Amino acid sequence: MNRTILVIEDETDILTLLKHYLRQEHFEILTAQNGLDGLAQAKALRPDLILLDLMLPGLDGLSVNRSLKKDPATSGIPVVILTAKADETDRIIGLELGADDYIVKPFNPKELLARIKAILRRIDQEHPLQTERYSSGGVELDIARHEARAGNALLDLTAKEFSLLMTLIRNAGRVLDRQTLLDLVWGTEYEGTDRTVDVHIRRLRKKMGEYQDRILTVKQIGYKFSDIDPS
Ligand code: CA
Image 1 (cartoon, rainbow, N blue to C red):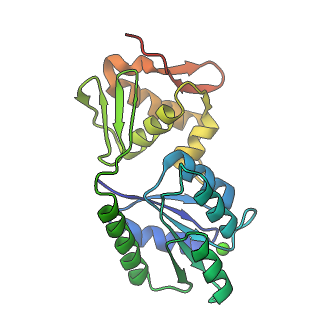
Image 2 (image 1 turned 135 degrees about the vertical axis):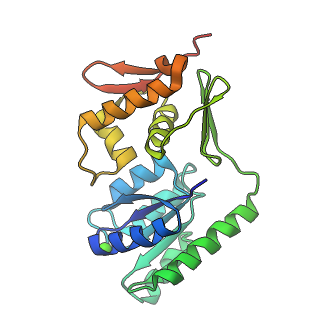
Image 3 (image 1 turned 30 degrees about the vertical axis):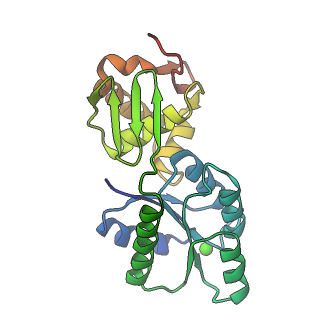
């Protein structure tokens, strides 16, 4: 099972560098280039860890961290702050707000990876049985195991299909328009179209077999996961 890391960083060079190193270690990467997008993705997709730049356009990193730690849905996600300032004040504020670690730019990617792994190891030890499951209308998701089942059958989903199903099921009963799905599953900087979403929904439905009607098409808007158990 691959861990997911959300990188909230507006500088494209640093994003590219981080993606490169994190992918080598088999992490799944989500990216956001501003604070609001980062918060939205953290809430919808619950990554295993967040790398958070402090100087961001719009909502700054400390405000993002504060919101993450206030919301019970995201307060348990470890946050590593990336800062260009070796400024003691920022460091103390960040750690007081519950950030798990911080690293000063320019950083050594190997050191950053070592710190990320140490935090994830610590969390595994503290919460060995912690798991997150969703179940609706006979469809079940086990986030920790990255497993999806329809009835009792294990579904063979790609990472994007799994994220798409997870986003729909977490919002069961709510209509999500295609742009929202693109933002939450692919990230806001991804140049996808409505068709990207439709194609993935079609593949997902096919894999769900007789459970495919749990994903409802809402005409001219988007999709929703039925929260009504048909049995
Ligand atoms: Ca920045």
